[in-house]
Figure 1: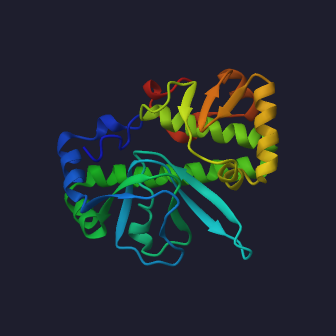
Figure 2: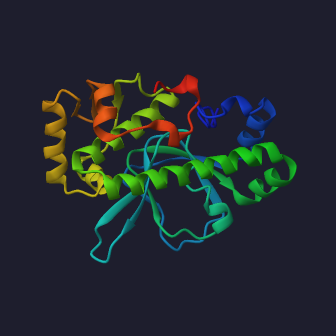
Length: 241
């Protein structure tokens, strides 16, 4: 099933079997994408929305020098650009971080869902509001937390999202992002990221090696980076607080 992970850990029980069948039928095309591929560029007019079946994707913006700032990192089960449905034109770029499998849902099919299945339409709207909540938290993280807290908070968010879809056991998870990727997500340089990773490791909090993250002290990590997963709107059964 293409939409097996959609809203896992987040109101999944509100999706009926008929809703899921409708989503499966709405996927006009499912195809693989290579790693480090830009799928949509800023200003592109879009007529489909992208659902991430497998892999990691990001949204980003470039400054005038071509320096990239990640503004979102997506994991399996995420609609990457559902907001493109009402906007029609994106104000940022979308790219893969790893090899991915994606499903494209034509906006014409979403039009039908809006009319014929209002309960499902409400859950799709909920999905876009989740993105907005995470954007607010990213603003807080970049604006108010110091470097080590920023990096730790990012790891907490990704781990919580992965755990909701069964891709983390709460302490160990794969994160195929380079130190440059992490720097672009956390507003640092790669050299600074390296130093902060060392600080986390030496503090017995977290270690990252060969794209695998191991959380050594999750309560300590949460305290350090002021992480509270409430903004992810996870079901109580999906995550421990």
